[in-house]
Image (cartoon, rainbow, N blue to C red; front, side, top):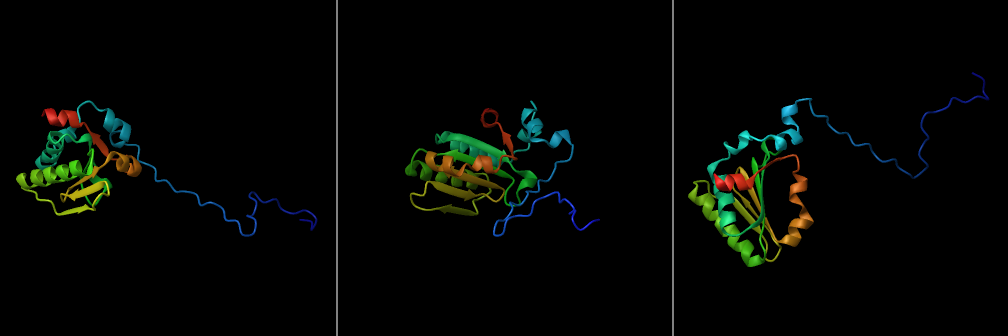
Amino acid sequence: MSPLKKKKSKSKPAARGVTRPLRRVVAKRKNNPAKTRSNRLASPATPSLISVPKHVLAVVKALDEKKAEGIRLLELGQLSSVADYMVVATGTSDPHLRALRIAVENALDEAGSPARGIESQKESGWTVVDGIDVMVHLFRPDMRESYSMESLWRDGMDLPVAKLLKA
């Protein structure tokens, strides 16, 4: 190679002091159609409805009886080492959140699975009840929108609460 001809590089070097953004590595799912999110949500007969533990069902029913809004039940399964289920609901005010928390605690106690821990700060708009394999998040409407818990756990299977309440 002659000294006048330089070998062309495929990428330009970054300017001094400028860093290049790191590429995100995304794990690919195996081609198992039963495990994809769209297939799990679209299946008409969800086998998970049968296997919902009685204390999780008791929590959902207690929240419904106390007029919680937007109750969502997510089955996390292998996605989380903390809990198998997550319940997210909205209370209209701080006193309503307190009433919902008490109803959840009572439902867990009656089902024989008492709450392990409760975290809430006065007027924070967010209460968490740890029921060992179920985490219950209670929000005021503004806090629920701000934290968007459902989008953080969007890979979890969304179980139909209306069908559970009818059962």
